[in-house]
Length: 360
Image (cartoon, rainbow, N blue to C red; front, side, top):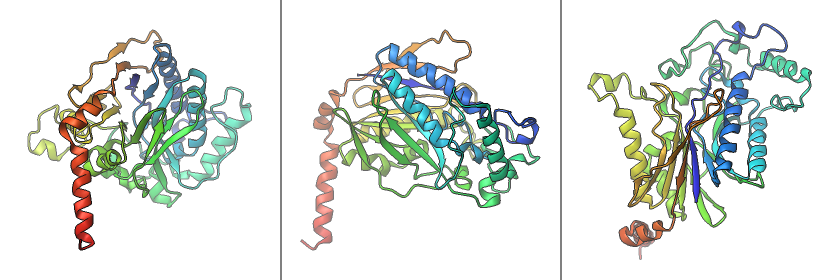
């Protein structure tokens, strides 16, 4: 099986729309449109290399939503663009989309090439009316999680008490374009708790052809029970879109003179540990391309550790593609399960605990 990882650098939108929304036809979702162009190129490239699946980072189409809650409004239109790509190129797609729990929004897609000019104005007017704090005066540096504060004028979710936002991982089947996997992030990173709402559903798996798949998102990797719950349901592959910064532990890490690559090594260790203890192939795609967005994406498996993939160099200078193709042999998972018997131990200990709780 060939699996592609597209380690992109999601483009962020401005924090202060008042500086850019100077005309009725301004493209308020310009960053999403640019990110989708990179996604399209990556999916096509993966398809040309016979990949069955391409995995993207967390926030890969919208960029950071801290202080930019309006970017969640076209979530369902973003999803439909990904569905089209999965159908067109016969490749499964996995990544996250932040979406409002409840929302009324324009029905016309702002991303359709056939949309009339009036669609852009309709969306601009809608965002002006529904997210007025997006037009505040405070500017915040891109990718600066230290600025993710509930008192930011631009953080319209908190200051206005608007609809709750959910960070949702999707797995879209290639060819059919059917959404066969959906998971709302339960374990939110500390700064995300100011503008995202955690999911409450149990972790579940789904079938993708002959393979059982589960979904996690970023900080879930630091919670072993999340991955273990998927393994107990028979997961063969765990897909984890991620947006993990090299500065996430600051300032505490600086106080203790943590090594410069501390966050990178931590993320690598967590991915390897989750793969080994669950006896799965764990696919982690982190955002990359800058000092803060440190990358480190890969696939980890028992016996193999971090797999070596083939890097595909993009010929499109305007593309955000940073693609790597991996050959994945899931057959070794059965050998790992016979060798380590971790799942057997879980099942045995679970049965013993159940008997104890029933007094038997």
